[in-house]
Each structure stands twice: as C-alpha cells, then as structure tokens.
Image (cartoon, rainbow, N blue to C red):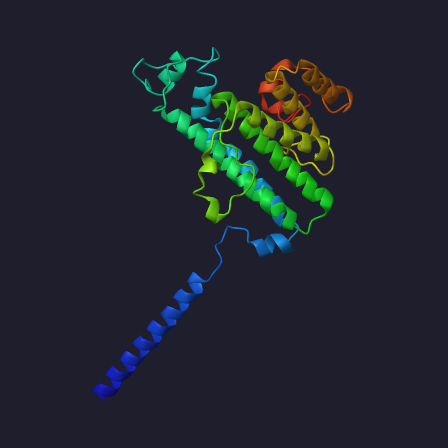
Length: 279
C-alpha cells in the first residue's frame, strides 16, 4: 500500500512537471504584450494610429522638455538663473548658466538621448504606416504628423549642436554597426531634412479644427509655423514672412489673438486660437 501511494505521488509530480514545462513553452511563445505586431498593423486600420500616438507620447519624456532641456535653453539664456547655491549643480546647470559646458555635462547626453529616442520611434512608425489597410488619405496624414515631429526633434538638435547624425529611415539589423549611421551630417544637410519633412507635413496635414484632427495633433498650420521659424534661422526672411502671413490669412477664423493676453499661460488658453501646436 505504501509503495502504491509512493507510486501515485511520483506519478503526480511527474505529470505536474510535464504540465509546467508545457506552460513554460506556451509562455515563451506568447507574443509580447504592449507591442504592435506587423500582422496587427496589416490587418487593423487603427494600429497605425496607435504607432503615431507612441511618437507623441515620447514628447512627455522628462528630458525632452523637462529640467535638462530647461538647462540647455532657459538657464543658458537670460530667461532664467540656476538659483540655489553656487555649488548646487555646478557641473551641470551651473555650467549652462555660465556658458562653460563641456562634453562631461550630463544634461547634454540626457537631451541628446531623449530626442534620438523620439526620432527612433518616428522612423519605426514611418516604416510601418505604409503597411496599414487605412485609407491613403489617413496614411498620408499620419505620415505628415510623424514627419512633423521628426522635423521638430532635428530642429532642436541642430540648434543645440549644429550638424548631427541623420537617421531618416529604420536601419536593418545588419546595418546597426555601420559607421555611416554615426557620421555627423553638416548643418546644411540637417536643415535640408527638416525642411523636406515640414514641406511634406504642410501639404498633407489638415487645417486645425478639421474633423479629422484631434486636439494636440500636428496640423497644417503647425507645420507652416515651424517651417517659417526654420526659414528665419536660414535667414530666408521672405519665405519665413510668407508662410507666417499665410497661416493667418489663408486659414481665416482658425488663428487669432486671445482677448486676454494672460490666458496664453493658463488653462483657459490651452490649444486656443493663438496655439499652433501643443500637447
């Protein structure tokens, strides 16, 4: 009787072990949750929209517009002082405040990495949007939104560092070690990509307030406004003026000054008539 009981115990344990192995195999073969598969992109018209939302989401990265970005912009200018004591953040914010930053300054790497992470997401989306079964107009709009966001990233990068590494598509696995992908482009080449992206966005994005445009998404006016600013940096003042003037005149009723100026900085002015683009 004792031997029979032992036999059943061993048999039960063996069956449990086999079952566990099977469960492990199922677990390992389960597609990653929270990721969009290529099959889903090909079959679900909404999947491409989700990919694009993921690019927007990266704008909330703390280093995209948080303290590191403030260090490279407001603190490095006359807009803000570092504050606190002289020793507090002396090798980071203090360097930016005194315009003595060197390559060891961690703020530089934080901002650089955040912007290239967003560019990587943008390139992934651009690579997959053509596979979507959504209408051609929808695919064009989504592509325009992503190219706007990529242009925005490169515009900030070129103003921080001049010419930078240009990644305009999704490299294959075999190309990842290619030194060409790490080559620094010229300032002119960087601006050429920015302008190309914004021209596409300008021609394919809807006007603000259009039924196909959700609040917080890039629009034709946003692309034209950013392109106007880009041409200011290129000292092409006539093109910059023409674009800025056209935003107001050719999109009548879409943009206007707020009646109360202070509301620009308050919740009441969020995505208001003065806003070209905000998230």
